[in-house]
Length: 199
Image 1 (cartoon, rainbow, N blue to C red):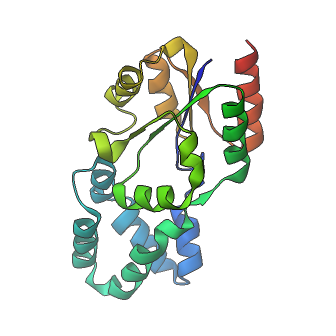
Image 2 (cartoon, rainbow, N blue to C red):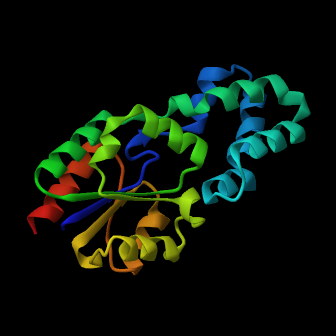
Image 3 (tube, rainbow, N blue to C red):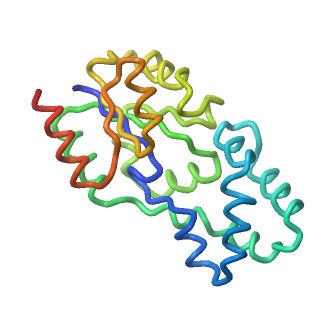
């Protein structure tokens, strides 16, 4: 396994909308309405696909939820600040790189948040390539985004492992011949990766 491909959300960065809302708001009904009115909307996936701007998305959310103007403004100005690196997995990146492994990112992410995290964290320099959904107008678990990764960086599927916290994404990666690891926690990831790299 020469090529190790990482998802970003909940693999390299913590991302939990419920936890963000717990920190920002006390009212349970507000939290439920925001989960449904922002994070579970088609607009969120359109942002990830790169077919709508963050400014336009914010305008639509605010327009559709007039009773939550104050709360939504607070959320939309701050949620990306909760994208915190998972330090054990960042350390793993450095270890893998020191062993000569090629590192890649394949992630559903939108431009606003991606620009924010890449401006803050130097470990992005470790990656040999990145396929980010908004840049290519494709989303996991679409098979095409996995094929694009292989074609773009001339990767041999059998020599490539993909790590993601969503089962369906891992299953589709395996359909195109990539070995998948369903991420649960840092120790499980390290253990499974070590086993794979020994074989």
